[in-house]
Image 1 (cartoon, one colour):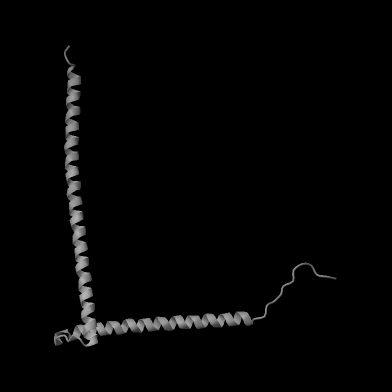
Image 2 (cartoon, rainbow, N blue to C red; image 1 turned 135 degrees about the vertical axis):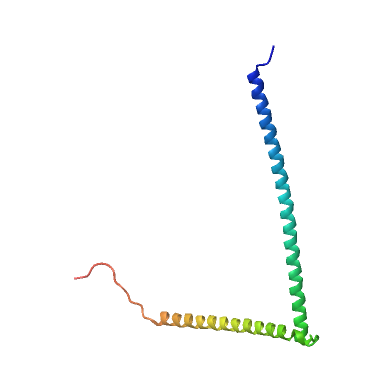
Length: 132
């Protein structure tokens, strides 16, 4: 029994389409795997950068504390940086003090309002009908 030429042609086209889809899927899988590897590498680089910056901050804090305690003297070329740090600490302290003042004022206002509310006489409103 001979195969129908139309059916053979359709099967060939289906096979070609299937093979093309498999090839595209393989390329897509490779691209996804490559992007996954890149994302992992990028994540690790970001983690290492953050760790390095944290270590620098800790070193700077330790040096600053040693300078303040008089255990370490830095060269004159660091004077500008030390002044900037001192100015930043003063600004932070001033800001904290102003916040404390604002909170204290708020508490005083709240206390005054409590006193006024308590001292105010209460009005009694009668309900119902009038008596003749």
